[in-house]
Amino acid sequence: MESAHGMQEAPPKVEEKPEWWASPATLGLMGFGTTTILAGLNDGGWILWGSLLSMAIFFGGAAQVIAGIIALRKGNMFAGTAFIGYGMFWLAFNSIVTVYVVAAPGSALTTGGYDIAAFTFVWFMFTFAFLINAPKHGWGITAVFLTLTIAFLLLTVQWWQVGAGNVLSMNLYKVIGGEIILTGALAYVVGLADLTNWNYGRRIIPV
Image (cartoon, rainbow, N blue to C red; front, side):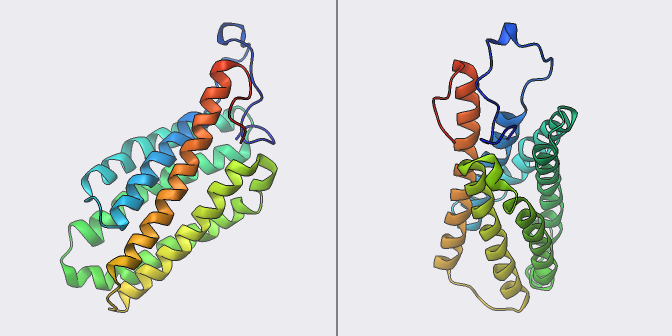
């Protein structure tokens, strides 16, 4: 996420690299990707909340915020804002899920459906702003923001229906969960490419 190709150009060997701060792209993308995969597994009904909420605090949340601070220090507004933004998203996600889903009874979940729908919609707006700027950073980053924009839109519809008291089919939850898993997998692939290309000093995985 540090150049027009979504990552830094292949650098010299680590010991020859003049800059003290390394690229935070791998850390940020891996933190986002793995946490998002767990979120998709949860939304599809394949796993419970425990592992997701823990990841949302530490790897999806704290690690991404650290990556974003490093990116801003390196002068990268796009990556820095994205990593800090989505790091804070996961921390806020942990809080809102704990209030409305984990700690509250079923009736409170229905009442909170509109609240969560509003939460996912403003993140849809945030993500759309990055989507229209993502093409400059390569197809990998563009694919991540495209699928993430769709994911937030689907989640908005899902939670709006929950707030309205409508019962959604398990198949629909699995479709939405699968789309979220795809988003996380794409972020993981871009992070893998960033790590691999940097480590071997040449573009092995083009993104």
